[in-house]
Image 1: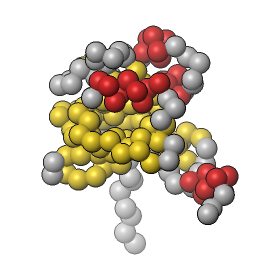
Image 2: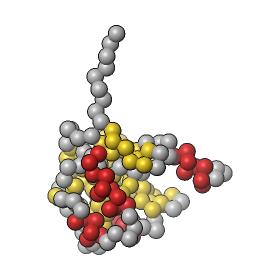
Image 3: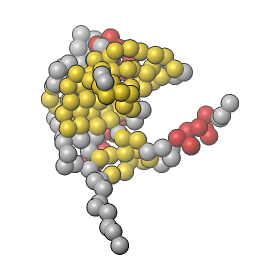
Image 4: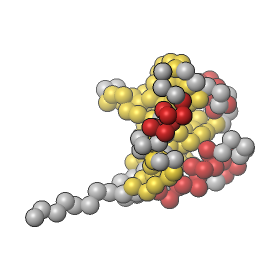
Length: 167
């Protein structure tokens, strides 16, 4: 078995998009920063989202049955920090940015690179986390923004690829 610290050090070398996962519904408003998001299939459009089972957000997302994956732009680092800090009240988190709604009613972050509005199709428990398999019901993209990735235990700007130069 690989040591937890060694695993975390190794994972620090795996760059990932920074996302704010949001929900709203009968069980209330919730949201958190997450990088464990991945496309599963495009037919039907489905992605997975991993949320720690000890997080209050996990329960609210599960009970609401919907969530939105907001893929952050490079200039939304401060919003990511608000949603990543456990002792920041949910009202303060959402007050730190402007929001819209798409099909499910989950909050959609204005200015995000993209927003994937989802219904939770199934759930699987793996270790300390819940894996939510989510069917995308609506999407919004903005093509003119640099993205924000988490790599080496820090946030980094990632931009569009420069045109290749041929010699």
